[in-house]
Length: 359
Image (tube, rainbow, N blue to C red; front, side, top):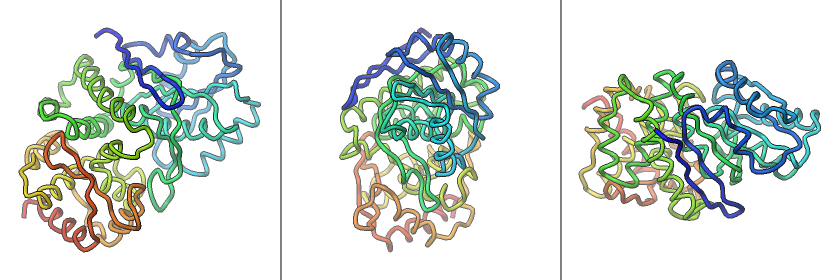
């Protein structure tokens, strides 16, 4: 497929999302300004595969790079502080550019560093996972706290998103599963036909063209939402479908036990389960569950402590006055935010766990 470009208008500036094959090797042409210094942050999985390409593409600019361990555990205050220290030691000034080369963890962590170093320097997202199609667009950057996911962060738009789909074909099946959960989420809040077309996806037979098409659709949905509601005052909250339980599971089980998308996949089923109870409607619970099983998503709740899960849910950023605000579906393409009482949530968790195992 040809390289595609999507424009996003943030409150501070417009930026482009470029999607294509091999475009990491043309990084310099997407730089929007003359920068005094370029700093690439990546992780131990991505660096051996793609760092040299991006370093070469930035030549002859002055470039420094940092490689950190891979995994959700690095979205922490410790690594955040370590990166700030490194920026100071290398004399980065406000005319420097940070490039986040990696998946959603790198994008969130490096983006938060960019947002806060010297009150903000420019950064570019270079996602290398399917999951990061979601997190790299819209300017939400954050680190985790042991009590909850993404509780320390900011809204800070990138200068560009450079999405080289060639990088997706070194992903393992776990990362593919993780990314497609967010694509399915975007379909559920927007369009029934798109949702069912995604359910025809077999991870054993993915082509570059199919992945690029699906990512393009997902980014278009996300871009429309964040342009309409950049600071999550209204409809951007709908992008949290599946995340009330998903984030709670990640925090309770320990970051990295499930990938973000695997946790969200369970959360999507849970949101459909609760929606059917609240609105007495029929939604594609069985169809989605079957597709998730066919593609080997882990769907067990690991006999988690429901009171502990409830406590984690109550730390969610969407909540008001310690009441859980959950994104539900009146129907596919018609999301709504509903307040759920603690008592009802515990009932839904119990009935959902029984439903998952077919009782």
